[in-house]
Length: 302
Image 1 (cartoon, rainbow, N blue to C red):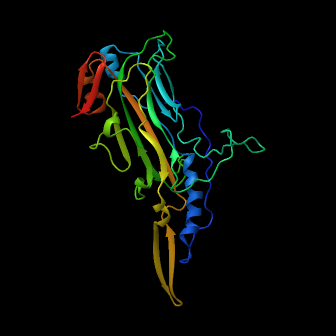
Image 2: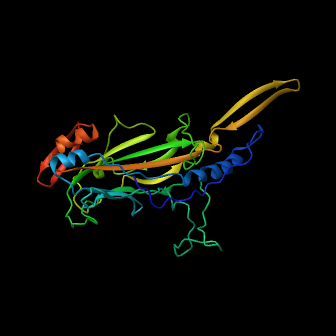
């Protein structure tokens, strides 16, 4: 998939490892601010599309879907109408504007070289992170297609790496807890429950959510998330080792999240309205129930 607008990482590295047993939580709070910034540039968005074969089978080519973050398009894949079967598509970066410093008028602050000034990430602070989807099947098509109604699904992923994700040598760290990356879900319960969480497919690292309403051409879903917070407990996760020498015991304190990067990924995909009962299990591997009639359809999980 083509990738546009790659953002250069603005990460910083903690140069000195804290070894003293007298190191305080306050000292590590500063370390955490530095190391967690290194994960901001690596957080990314992705867009996938699983119903091409089904679209061909049912003759439904005019399909497209867009992933949105804080009201802006991040990634999209739309039918272009080109005879060679190419798609109008792009994959962007999440959290790219999260730490931008703004003045009293809300404008982004630049330094003397024209670079965007970034603020330190604050552990425990809630940053705006609104993720939703739009039915973009009728946008920018060569033949001005009207687009089609569709059902959509968003999958969210949270994890830690030992280096910035753009580094080819970066490795995923499954032993570090993804739940401390709090991507807060909304509209999943109560009267505003437009998103259905697939508990069978979800883990601490992955959340799979289905939009219950049929998404008509040009319409947007409601938000699936509203804030992102790095929980304060990361400053308390330490490992201590004791080494006995001729001079006595030496205690070494290592902070588990020191020098690590957190990553957020989001994918969105769509299946056309026609024959959705048969198309969705084949495309998404999940049995669903489609209720209603005409364009007034709703989806529920079986």
